[in-house]
Image (cartoon, rainbow, N blue to C red; front, side, top):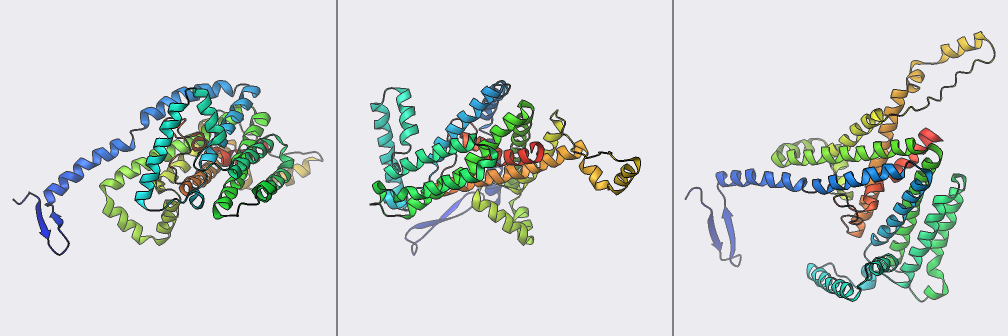
Length: 404
C-alpha cells in the first residue's frame, strides 16, 4: 500500500480526483521518461542524414559552374517565394476564425475534407503542383493576395539581377508599388483591414529578407566563384549544425537537472530576460545552442581550404625612410588583424552571428504565421526557407567582408 497510488474523490469539486504518488513511483517515471525524450529529440536524424547525403553532392556538382550555380540559386529562390506565400499570417478577419479550440478543430476537419476532395478530383500530379504554386492556400487566397504575391515575386526576381549599386532604388520603388496596390480601382471596394496590412508587411519584409539575400548569394557566385560560395555555405551550415547539436544535448541535460537550471536562471536576471526574448521568438532556442553556433563557425572557417587576402597596404614608393616610418606606426593589433588565420576566425564569428540573426528573423515569421516549418520539401530539415534562413544574412556579411 505504501508504493501504490491512492485516489480520493472530493465531493465539493464535482468528483475531481487527486492522486498522490510515492517517491519510488515518481523516480521510476522520471527514469523511464528520460530515454523517451532523448530518443524523440533525435528521431529526425536518419532523415536529416539522408537529405545531407543526397543534397550535398548535388550542390557541389551544381556550384562548379557559373550557369548551374545561377540556376540552382534561382530555383531555390522560386521555391522560397512559394513557401513565403504559405507563411502569410492567418487572415482571421476575412475568414472569421475563432480562437477557441473547438472552432479550430472544426476548421481543421473541414480543411482536411476539402483537401481530400481536391486530391480526389485532380489526377495529374503536375496540375496539383501548379495549382499549389499559383493559388497557394485556398483559404487565404483572395484577388488582392494573389496580386500582391505576383507583384512581390516579380520585384523579387528583379532585385536579384539588378546591380548592387541600384539596390536602394529597386527596393524603394518595389516597396512603394506594393503599398499602392490596395488602392487600385478593382480593390477600392475592399476596406484596408488588418489582414491586408499584415499581408503587405509580410511581403515587404520578404523583399528585404529573401530578395536581398538571394541578390548577394548570386553576387558571391559571380564575383568569387565556387570557392567563395562554397566557403559561405560550409561555414553557415556547419554553424547551424553546431547550434543543433549543442542545443539538443543541453535539452537532454536540462531534462535530468531541472531544479539546478531554474535556480541558475533566477540568479541572473539579465540572462533570464535574454532567454525569454529568445523563447518569445522560438521556444526551441537555447543559450547552449547559440554558444555552439559561435564555436562551430570560426572552427569551420579555419578548416575550409581558402586563403583570404589580407588587404595589407605596404607600398614603399618614396624612400626607405618612409617605409621605416610606416612600419613604426603599425601597431600589433593592426598586424594581428592582417593575419589570415585571425581573419578567417573573425569571418566565422561574423557569419555565425549573422546566421543566428537570420534564423531568428525566420522564426519570428513562422511564429506569427503559426507554422512550425516553412515547408516539407527537405525531410528532417523542413522547407527551403528553413535551410536558407541563415544564408540570407550571412551572404550580405560575406560579400562586404571578403569580396567588396
